[in-house]
Each structure stands twice: as structure tokens, then as C-alpha cells.
Image 1 (cartoon, helix red, strand yellow):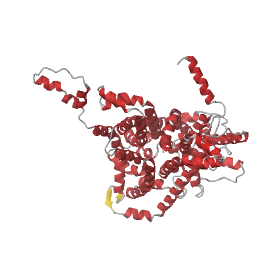
Image 2 (image 1 turned 180 degrees about the vertical axis):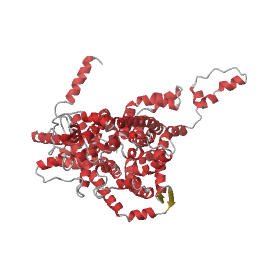
Image 3 (image 1 turned 120 degrees about the horizontal axis):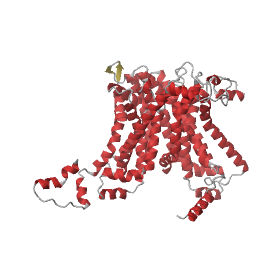
Image 4 (image 1 turned 45 degrees about the horizontal axis):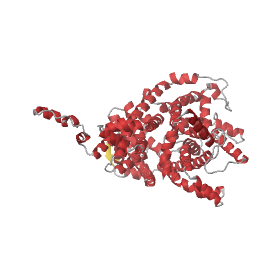
Length: 315
Length: 304
């Protein structure tokens, strides 16, 4: 403790000098702190970086290193770029890549369109607005695993409520949502749109509420129709929020795992296999950590490009 | 404030925002009758869309097994039963999973609050070398797919004999919630005038003392929001839990629910009862967090 070692009373007593009265002025206290200010700040920040280092920085560095290795049991041998060249020739990788892109684009587009519609609706003159705002947040409360199981149950071919509804509306069913390679990915995307749109809608609602009302008045004085007001007043104000939502949502959905893993586990026959579920299989079912690491590095690079866009926008 | 003036204030507030009629929207004229009907239809559709899956979880959880096999499915349970909840809590040992989730999420919350408030204070009050880069680095930590972090983390944990422990999940979940929490706490601290902690230091507080005794109590809303957020992150996580805690007694609730998929015949009524259990804490916390969450999330995106 720097304070006790530096206190002058000890040394003064040892030297036989009569104790000086303690200086009550703050300057003497201030001298007790011997650390420079930036170092004190670093001490505040350091514990967080320790945790992030253990769970993020070290694993990332280790994954990069691992991606040049071949792991078999407990032995690890250097293989250079072999994992990467194998990856780019692997049809499973390209199929998963394609599915990841479809899943991400479909989800992001759905989140933004539905989120915008809901935000505009909640921005109108409506009764009980706070109640409806909470209702519109409900899908967000559920763990992805719970959402996955619920929609699997609702979309069950024989017992599911959605097929029953479709049948009563006259559609020829039953639709085999998870047994059909054509329907499985769209079913997952719809589930994911339900799960994720509240982020877009509340963010856009907040952005809508920040638009000065005078601009609408000015526009209507200038003779703008309500579509014109939307096009030339609302949309420009939402541009920043839309870009942020699009980039963040792209990152989140591209690396999403739970929903797909629980709903279909990549099936049927790889029709819903995305990069994350593929990497999970390669690492924790086949235990090919090196190959999975290469897959992870490629995914991270794609996400890095998206993140750079995001960071440059917010700074 | 006297009673009369408070009442007057209440009246004027009511005049501005009538609660039981059409609330004023942004810059739009009062809707005509046709538009009102359109809005009501849209609101009805929104409500149905958002709440139906939730309602279906609850309705299924109250049904007997035989009723879940009806084709077409019945809307309301013919015979309401709470047996499913008892069964999953005892026979399927969801009680244990619930307890595990509670401990892990609670510890994650504590650790996250401590670390995030310290770091947020550091970023808010001190001019750090490379501070801006570090802030971005914190944010960029969210970028990596979980699976990339999981492979080395799993290897490390298994070398240290730490698989199937609470610690390994608590540390991981803390790192997931830290980026958002650090930024949120920094935002809260930025709103508190620096003169307050300077005064505390002059009165003899150390930096840590000024932080813990003066600034932290003032940012209690931020601490609460951070706490709830990190609790939810930990409560809802699945990927790390399914890989790092494979012993059945160490399952968390999401893993417990997902472990049903492998079964030959899923007992949907019991599973949906599990879904209700897994969601109860979330609903409570969301009710508390809603306002903070909306403000915290939207602040970054709206300001530009």
C-alpha cells in the first residue's frame, strides 16, 4: 500500500523528531498518489481486458494458428495452407456459404421491412401506444432455443397449428416444412424474422420520434403528399439508423447458430447447413479442429469486412 | 410542491397527452375514420403476430399428452392440467437446469457489473493512451462467431480440467456481455459531471473511492440496465453451454430444452411447459428493462 509506506509519521518518530501536526490541506493527500493518471485509468480498464483476452483475444490468435495445423487425436502437425485449399474445394463449404448468405440477407431484409412497418405504425396516433410497444417487443424476450422449439412445434407437419390453419384456408397440405429441402430454409428465415424484428422496430421508432415536426409542417406547406413527406423527410432522417441496423443485423445473423442448430441441425441433407453449424459439426462431431479453425478464420474475415463498415459509421 | 399545484400539473399533463384517445403521433394529422379502421386492423395483426407463438406455448403446456396428438389441433385445452410443469421439474430435472442457469446468470451479472462499471469509468474519466482504439476493440470483440472462440476455449478448459464447471461458463458469458455493458456504463458516467468526482478526490477519496462512493450510486439506472442485460445474455445462451457443460447435472435450461430434439417422440406439452419456465425470468426482467433498453440501444443509432 503506497499510502502507509509513504506516511511521514513513522520515519519522523524513528528519527526522534517531534511529530508534526498533520497537514489538513488536500495537497499533501494528493502527493500520496504516486501513479500517473493514465495508469490509474488503465487499472480501471484492465480487468475487463483480462476477461476479453481470455475468451476473445487468445482464442482468436489460437484459432488462426490452429488453421495452419492438422489435428489428429493429440498430435498437431503443421500443414501450411492445406486446410484453406481443402476448404475452397469443399462443396459442403460452398453450399453452407450460400445458405449463410441467403439466411442473412433474407433475415436482414425481413427485419428491416417489418421493423419499418411496425415503427411507422407505432408512430401514428394510436390508442394505448405504450402497450403496443411492449407487445411488439415480445418476440425478443425468448431465448433462440425456445423460439426454435416453439416454431418447430407450430410448423410440425401433422400436429402443427400452422398447417392446420393453412388447411382451413384451403391450401393443399400438409406442408413438410422440415422434411423438404425447398421449404426448410424459408421456414427458418421466417422464424428468425419473427425473433429479430423488434430490434429494428424500436430503433427506427426512436429515430422517427427524433425527427423535428416542423419539417413535416414545412413539407406540407410546400404541398408534399404524405408519400412525398415519407420520401423526402422521413427516409433521409432514418438513413443513419437503417445503415446501423443493417450492418449490426448482418453481423448477428451471419454468426447465428442456435436457431438453425435446434430447428433442423442443418438438414434435410444439408439444405439448411450454414457456416456456423458446419463448423460445429467439423469441430465437435468430427474433431477436425484445424479444418474448423480455417473455416472460422474465413467467417471472421467476412465479418471483419462488415464490422469495418459499422465502426467507420459510428465513429 | 403543494397538493393544488401537483393537481394542476397533473391536469395539464393529461391535456397534453390524453391517455384513452388517439395519441398524437409525429407530425401527422388526426386520422379519418377509414384510416382509423386501417390502423386498428394493422394493430390487431401486429398483436396476433407477436403474441400468437407465446400463446401457443402456454396453451400447449396446459394440455394433456393425448390432446397434443389431435388433428386438427384444438385451440383451448379441453382439460387444463398443470401436471406437465410438475413432470418436467421433477422427472426431466428441469429444476436442476433452472438452478444451474440461475447460478451461472447471477454470477455473470455480478462479474459484468463490476468489470463493466470499472472499465466504463476508466474510459469516461481518464485520458488513456490508445483509449479510442481500446473502445473500438471492446466493441469488435463482439464480431467473432462463437464457434471461433469456442474451439480454443474448449481445449483450454479441458486442459485445465474445467469442463462442467460454473466458472468456465461465467467467464465466457461475462465476455459476451462486456462490450455492450462497458459502452453503456461509459455513456452513463459521461452524463455525470466530472466536478463531482474531483470534489470527492479533494475531500480525500482515492480514485476508486470517488468512483465507488460518488459516481456509481448516481448511475444506478445504468447499473440496473447493465445487470439485466448481462443476465439475459447468460440465461439465453446455448452454444457454449452445450459444448462446455455436457454432464447432465450441469445442463443449463436452454440445453435442457434442446436436448429433447434427439428423442424419438417429442412430448410437446412437457417441452412447452419447459419453454414457459425458461421464459418466466426473461419476462420479468424485460418488464423492468424495457425503458432502459430502448433508450440505451437507440441512443447510439439515432444520434448520428
